[in-house]
Amino acid sequence: MTGRLVIVGAGQAAFALAAKLRALKDTRPITMIGAEDCLPYQRPPLTKKYLLGEMSFDRLLFRPDHWYPDNEVEVRLSSWVEEIDRERKQVVTQDGSTIAYDTLVIATGSTPRKLPTSVGGDLKGVYVARDKNDADLLTGEMRAGRRLLVIGGGYIGLEAAAVARHLGLEVTVIEMGERILQRVAARETADIMRAIHKSHDVMIREGTGLHRLIGTNGQVTGAELSDGSTIEVDFVIVGIGVAPNDELAKEAGLEVANGIVVDEFARTSDPSIFAAGDCAILPLKGTRVRLESVQNAVDQAEAVAAIIAGATDPYDPTPWFWSDQYDVKLQIAGFNMGYDDTLLRPGIREGSASIWYFRDGQFIAVDAINDAKAYVTGKKLLEMGINPPRAMLADSQADLKQLLR
Image (cartoon, helix red, strand yellow):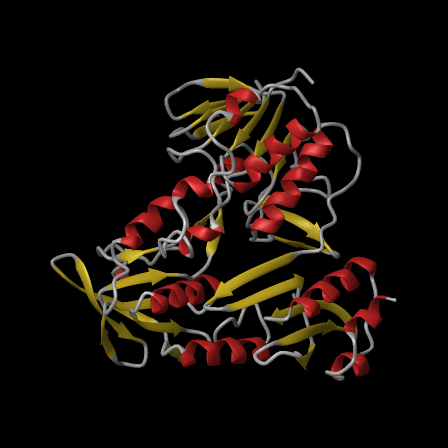
């Protein structure tokens, strides 16, 4: 336990890894390198409770300042790695400093995709929503009566729309696909979430892309849409997906394929280097995927910590996700990639429902909307490898707990 561990990144996965190692009584030196100027913090509340003014930034920190020296975890803030020298087993930071490692973990996360300058992506008032700096900039824009354009009808865009409406803004969401949530959820889930947003007076325009943003003196003032219409806006939030931060790994000669390729133990093509979180593409159910979620960042990082400390168990996750919009909690268990059939099950309470996904007759995922029982049951069924009978799922009066017996 004497070889130094260097963690590139200081986000959710990086902190979870360091904390788990110390919980396992692993005493090796740890150095964490993060580009931001603040200690590791929770990201999901940034664009919700933090943006709404319901939670101070101090409450978002995973641990207070003293936790890091108390646990002999060195954190280098406002710093980033320019090069991984695999031959010498050291990293080179932007100021030319070198840090030797015995084990290296890349936890660099992902970066929101931005609009190109050719369509006005460089105008003032055009934002993404990812880190504290983004949230602080948006705080100054989120004022009642202002007009917000959200580009992208995925979870990020819809969550931003919900916060803006809560604060009294006029909100338009445009989605170039035929419907919102097209890449990530079934039509039934999209229909329910669309109805919820429309009930809160959000204008959702599907099958509508952006032609270009209009600016005056460098400030965004409007948008020309793909259907030929023009709308006036005060600012824009772009939610068109993220890209894995895998350039550093690629430059170091590690295997990369829309993410840093890792095996079931989160090892890269170099056995001394691991990757975890949004930047990693991992094996799951016979394919390779990137799981862009807090859940995976934590669970995979903790699995890496256990492996570094001597465990031999592979990382075999049952993915889960969530999204809070207004007073609606959408909870997702499993991974619906490749589904060919769905079943909509009304919930017991008004406004609750669940959508069950199948592939070749096998249950693979569930979306639960204000239906915690369906979520918990679905997650346990996946973990236990039980394929629930469709007739029972279709019976809204049946007790789901019976499926676990």
